[in-house]
Image (cartoon, rainbow, N blue to C red; front, side, top):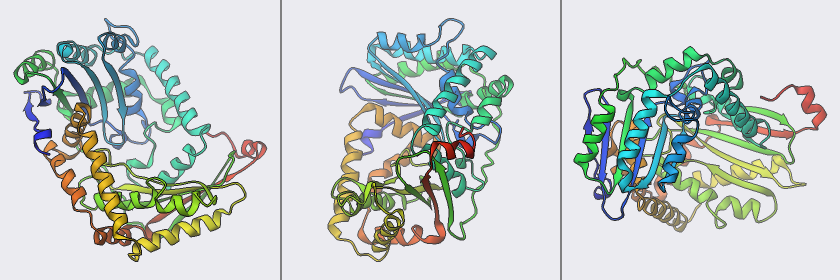
Length: 431
């Protein structure tokens, strides 16, 4: 495990951290830029600004037109993309090894000369609002999940969506964007990862040349307010036009560095992974549910701070939402009481372990693993413990976490109740 993640860490004078992973198996590399710039770094009034900048970074510079950055990479046989999470924003290029200098230079260029203007802000603002409308207003469950997170979290910034609230996106000012970019895209708030067929000394020379003159910033102290322990079930009904009833239930679970992460993943696997899982066999196979599953991301994508484990089910036509929810809690109680086979835990453990090991075969995932642990947990070395975490899954630990977290006082439930278009209109605009 350690040999696959044998990064060399370097820190420039301006605070920029650089991780280099040398692997000459294939003539390719993955270049990644990770910024501690996610929704947990926002505040009411500027929600969604991190995701907005994921769009703005492709709007062009003084030298490159909109989307020209991507076209240059793609013309050299590369893949370029970005994604925003609750905790960070990541930009990456997977390219032939011979294009190292190109990607180093291009990423530095757009950091230094990104065009952040009233015009580019207005353009991307509307793009993001349209994206939000597609995700939230017109998708079956997007707005329900937003309601769930806003109800489950009372104080923590995870309560708002990564894409932001529409009223905040509408009112974001150019000054707020410039301030956010200056602070959150500072070198001392970033990690560069280069993984692949490279010479580490050349990588460092290139990065020093192109990024060494970026000025560090005085970063504000992180003042994320933790949520108080939940002291009773919370419930809400969400009405919108929909074909079927559904319910979503969230349980507070710990953050990325807690060892309970791994038995919780096994628990989710037992409940909802594939056609042999408990929820599929009991509800979907029998025609009681159109869908029944668990939402939970494995490391390194598991949130830094205490997260939510979401169980949900969509009732089949003619079915009963009440009976479906009651059946879900019966399955949860069975796990809490230890009424499961050791073989189920073994299968979950093997599935999680093999999925992780298969992903480790790619330079891209190894780069993400090191870079995200560096930016979220303070050191890529903590990624060395992931495989050990999966190996430590036991039936006793699965029952233990089921009892610790999946109880009624720790539960928030939002039920989707379909309404007619006329009633939906009377309820007001869904943004």
